[in-house]
Length: 438
View (cartoon, rainbow, N blue to C red):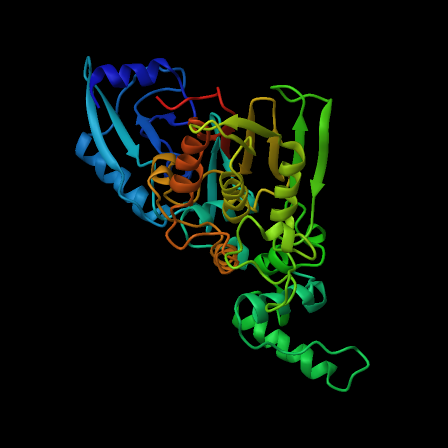
């Protein structure tokens, strides 16, 4: 950093990524600042700058100031970190110490020492505060140390699973043996339940928690009788608007609920599972899951357009390629942040575009550029793997570049938008005449 850059930081006050402090600040307060910025998107702590932006400079020798900063980062922060330290001569004997914190700190959440306790800190606007349990969970997920879909669902039981879907999954999708389902009056009922419990523990759809065996978040999402009871954020809110903006008037509004995966007829029947679990899945499903409900909603509200091909033949096709739409919906279900409990996935059709909005920032080290290149990373590994079993997700991880980006270019020459903003991720598909490929 040079003097001009420092002057710009000071002139702009204390936005989300900058904190002003005297160098006689208490070590716990400095640790709190550092932890909050590491848990945010990185930033700078400027030592020797007053809250009003007045530069007073360090009060201790530069080498002692650096040593003190490193001691705080090592002793008052958990896990310890080694920040980048530099100084700039402001003139008139005033030296500003600059602590620079990385935007991709790998060991989130960072906790600051408070007495004998360690407390996770969050940067919210220009203030620093203690993190809520949900915010702390999201930080663990960003670091890849917590898979939320493996979290136990307290109060749940084997009875919360749709056993038809479980049999369908193990017997017909995975093509492996599974326990029988016995009625309560059967002498084998208890044995059957015990066998199913073992099967679900071994496949991480259930977990032992506080002496009880309960479903996991992923198990309830995928195979639950009523996921909404335990996970109010588990559905999709779908709206087909008449114009190009959100409006009270709409062609259709739907609240899509239920298990993520569909119930299919047994393998080997005329209406059995599709060979590739692909776009024909809705026609095959006995009981549509949330993904296929969403696809059905899109079909009901998407026009079929007629075009003349190069040979002069009339061709009819959907306004958007079904594979691209399905990929956007599946990605939202598989990778959304389920710790955000007040928000469904949003599926919106407008006059000129289709949008799928997934709550939460992109997981782990994912960026939009990496997604375009086919980068593979997951926030909900268990959900992703089960959806892969149903062939909703490609093993190659190239669904976004192939099905969405290349698919839209081939379909109507438009460039889809992939946008991360305001703690949400948006996939936006355009009709012909929208964002054309250059």
